[in-house]
Length: 281
Ligand code: C2E
Ligand code: MG
Ligand code: MG
Ligand code: MG
Image (cartoon, rainbow, N blue to C red; front, side, top):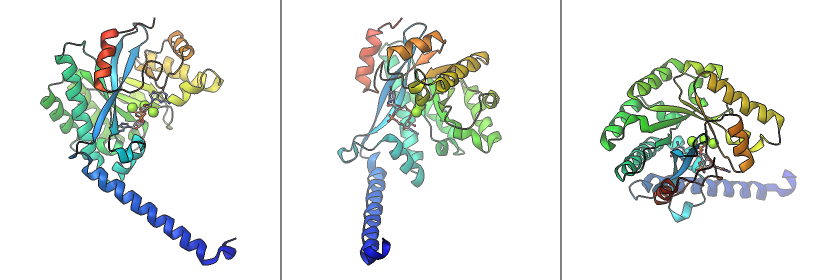
C-alpha cells in the first residue's frame, strides 16, 4: 500500500503533522494569554448530602470562554497546560477565584458550603504549594474548612513521604482533602488509610454502570462500606438518574454530584439553588 501511494503518502502525512503542530502551538500561545485576557471562568456543580437533601458543597470547574475553544474539554486544556507548565499559573488562578467566590457567597448571607477545587499532580508537587494555599486563604479570608482540594490517586504513586507531609500540613491548616475519580487508579483503599483523606469521590464510570453490572455494583458498595469503616466520606460522581440516587441512598453513600441535581453552572445560578434548597428525600 505504501508503495502504491509512493511519495504522496508521506507528503500528505507530513502536511497533516505540520498542521497539527501549528494548531497545538496556536492553542498554547492563546492559552498563554488567556489569564491576562480574562478568558477563564469557573462554573460550579452542587454536591448534595443524601441524608438531608441539602447542597453542602460545590465543585469548581474551569471553562475557557474564548469562542475559538469553546469545545475544548477542560481535560485537554489541563493536559496542555501540564505539558508546558502553564498549569501553575492557571491552577493558582482557579484556586484563588474559587476561594474568593465561596467567601463572596458567605458575605451575601447564604449558608456556608465547601468549595472543591481540582489540583493537578504537577501543581501539588510544587515545593511552595502549601504556602500558596495558605496565602490564598489569607488573601480571600476564606476559612480553611470551607476549602477541599481534589487530588487524584496518581499523586500517591511516587515520592509518597514528601506528599504525605504536604497533606498533613494542609490538614493541620484545616483544609480538606479528597481523592477524585477513585477506583480508576491501581491503589487499594487500604493503601489510602495512610493518607489524611476526608473524602473519596467514586468515579463516574462505576456509578454509570452499577445498576446493570454486578462488578461495578460490588465496587461501589465495597468502596462505600470500607470508607465508612475508616470514617472517610463518599461522594458518588456523575449521578444521572433517580434509580442511581435511590440505590446510593440505600447503600448509605454520603453525598452525590451529577446531572440529576445540576450540570455545572455559573455562580448566579448556584445562588438560586441555594435559595430553593429542593429536598430530594
Ligand atoms: P472531574 O474533576 O472528575 O470533574 C467532574 C466532571 O464530570 C466535570 O467535567 C463535570 O461536568 C462532569 N460531570 C458531572 N456530573 C456529570 C454527569 O452526571 N454526567 C456526566 N456525563 N458528566 C458529569 P468537566 O467540567 O468537563 O471537567 C473534566 C475534568 O477536567 C475534571 O474531572 C477535572 O479532572 C478536570 N478539570 C476541570 N476543571 C479543572 C481545574 O480547574 N483544574 C484542574 N486541575 N482540573 C480541572
Ligand atoms: Mg474533580
Ligand atoms: Mg471527579
Ligand atoms: Mg471524573
